[in-house]
Image (cartoon, rainbow, N blue to C red):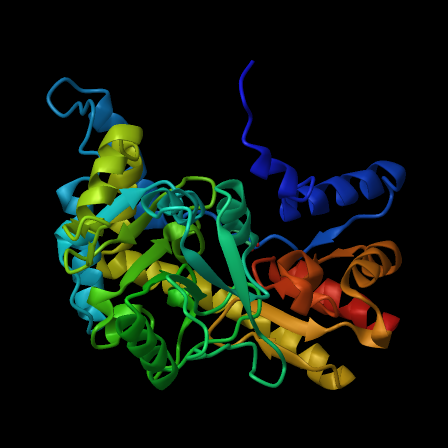
Length: 398
Ligand code: MLT
């Protein structure tokens, strides 16, 4: 009889967004005449940009011709895309070697898979509230997680505490779920903490493209020393509407070298390379061909137009919260708006209330951790019309 990984018993029954989908499906099947507006999961609604689409078509055609057909590709990703990403960083003032870039199918997969590189007895430091994947994947591994509190007082941006000795630290900025962004000084404190404590920062920058304030860092590598202590995860999901198409990248600098239990040096870059070559056969060629077009000048311009469109939704939502005097954060430099549930409701209560009374779907803060108990997240990834309609219903309700 197999001995099962009983750490799975420690997980909640459903992944957060699966639970939301279950509740919404139940509601819509009981109320087929009440159309629901979905501002819950951060899924984009604008189609792929022209440049990406053209390149995807070209990629399909290349696979159909014996002169250009591609079989197995490099597990790390094609050089053309790794170089395009390295150039993209350079244009944003950050040096990242193309060799350090690993192409993948999602920041969710990579932030989950990276846990394999670390032994069980590490102390994992995770903010609360937090993207549930970091917690669930470490729980599946049976690793010890400690939390740092994100609260209104610290603007949901927890800072290092010297009395806590963490080995692995998860940070996400612009943050999911709160939309809060670390500034350079704050990230520098985290990098200094990691270097001093020989910790690794796992930095999720999936929402970097939404940063419009030039003073805010879009990559942890904008901070000196970060290449010695940080892995960065990024994705084309939100930047370029690839939530269905799937393409992401993880940066593992060669400078990330630690001493193992025998006193020998081990490179995280080497380990991740070994992991990916063994367990991953690379992102589809045609997807990478499409992704490379995102990083061209024209491609970036088109993505920016879509981001501006979503940020207009963020403005519509933020304006309504302001009008109602409801405390909120995010909505600037981030597609997420995080606010205090009105009427002292807790977040699941508020979720049900909003669904029943106004047919708006959001994400209850409790799904991101105990500090989210009285908060709620809306996304700006809807269409203008539905976001406006949702805020009209919100206005009538409160
Ligand atoms: C979210 O809504 O938090 C995100 O869409 C989840 C994800 O990117 O996996």
